[in-house]
Length: 386
Ligand SMILES: Cc1cc2nc3c(=O)[nH]c(=O)nc-3n(C[C@H](O)[C@H](O)[C@H](O)COP(=O)(O)O)c2cc1C
Image 1: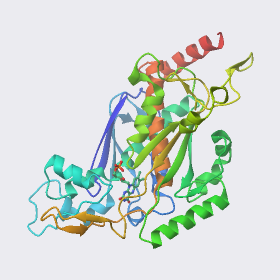
Image 2: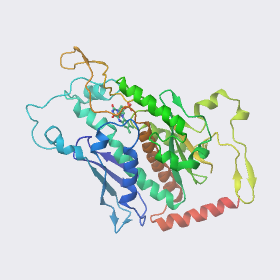
Image 3: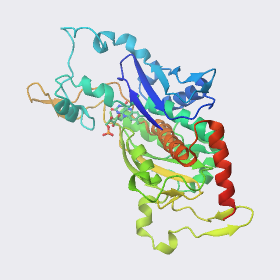
Image 4: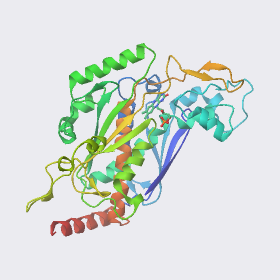
């Protein structure tokens, strides 16, 4: 399976083409829209989220609500484009009075992108580098999630830290037990007191013209043993999940399971001992490995953690340089979120869902959903006899 995304932040639409889905998979625009709405929520978002109420259009690859095995094309129109037609028209002449963006924002692709692609107007870079692109990732993730759900694989996410405020460390599978609380929390935090402190920290940063980052956790339960492979570097599931999460705008660190904390502990406190019971097969009492050993899922919950840097666009902008005459200048201000960690967690779920769905397709093969299901039953029967 593969997908590409296209679209500028203030262009007409964000689009994606997904290839390699099985035929006969039911897909509902409502399910995709639900995840698009979840991406738009979260305490600390800026004005853009009030303008856009993202709605997916399915343009290809489905007939009467089921996939055809052909490429699926999804599109989400940018409502804001109506105000940007003079600045973002894909065709026509550049208006002579167009305001060029010439002050690159630290922490964005503005400077490196303008030098690489030889642009004088930084908008040519920032429109595509913008996290508006995550609309497509979330739509793709919702499709992947629909496929995974058929195989009883479910995904969750929650926020662990925002700026200096951290929730008490807890087993991720226990945290998601109360998922309604997380879904209804403006900061996707299960503990109301920590959530309150997180919102206070966001308010303080915003009042100071500043921004905050944080960390979030994505958990996948019901993942069978055997996704990914130890035999080649680019087939390792942990590597693929890390790359997928790291590809999300502003993500600067990824951990699988215990991640960095494992480095400080002796092996006897890290490796998850193996047990067997005839009713449930092989199992563990701990999951420091985050459900992956040797690049292969081991049947435990998959646990990924990602670190998001603070939003780079600040209402009290940082020092920069005017690229027209190299004079010192404060960076350009685009409308911005002051904290987007809760939204990034939803995007994280989506990219993890995609990688797991892709690995499941590789494991089970088949062209139709029925063929995948048949192959799944056969595989589980084989595993149960070991
Ligand atoms: C959901 C989400 C929302 C974001 N919103 C903004 C924003 O409003 N303003 C901003 O400057 N950066 C925002 N970012 C971060 C930038 O997109 C990101 O830092 C930038 O593209 C540079 O990429 P890099 O940080 O991966 O190097 C957001 C990121 C995510 C995941």
